[in-house]
Image 1 (cartoon, one colour):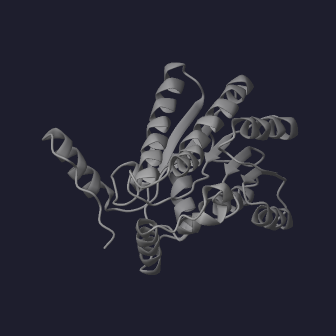
Image 2 (cartoon, rainbow, N blue to C red; image 1 turned 120 degrees about the horizontal axis):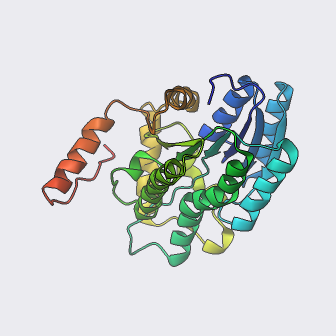
Length: 280
């Protein structure tokens, strides 16, 4: 894609806060039409108002990305309104701590539903329409550093984010094999000043209370990491736009990534269990 984005169309899931909100504002600054979606209606309306006040063309659609019919409806409304999508930011995500055997099936289904089925649903809903439109485009799937290396007491989240990273790789290869004019990147942020540790605000009520000891431990650790100095969402978005313009697949937010990844793959080469990243 050209670096002149004026008049093109961006779609952002998880746009009501954090990285998604920052993406929406950056797209508006680039004079793009912006489609924002989130499961949280009140903050979504607030972001819509902010963008409209800034002069952007905006479509806001409350969407549960774990629901394939809802995501397909989001795509249909987007193409009905704007006729095309040029940048698709698949960004919605939730966090659930816990060791593998203590989290309920419902916990696993919630996290995998948002963090893995959400991207799958977006790919299935948007990519056929984007291919049909024929324009150059770019898809950015938000995974995590925890999609490349494991962290303790976070099994549902880590599994979902490894899956999202694998989906991004597979999608990139599949599109390249068809010589499609759509590129793919995978965003793997580390510590970012967002509300991810407070994902329980969107936890379905029928799942009950998540406040087991393992969940409290990791949520507190995440908050501590942010307090010690996390990346701002705006700085992450600057990195995203620069990486997309450069055609990078992996979008990282820390210079320490090569060390972590190198250690992991040395372990794989020697058939050892890779080390887990500590919270301290």
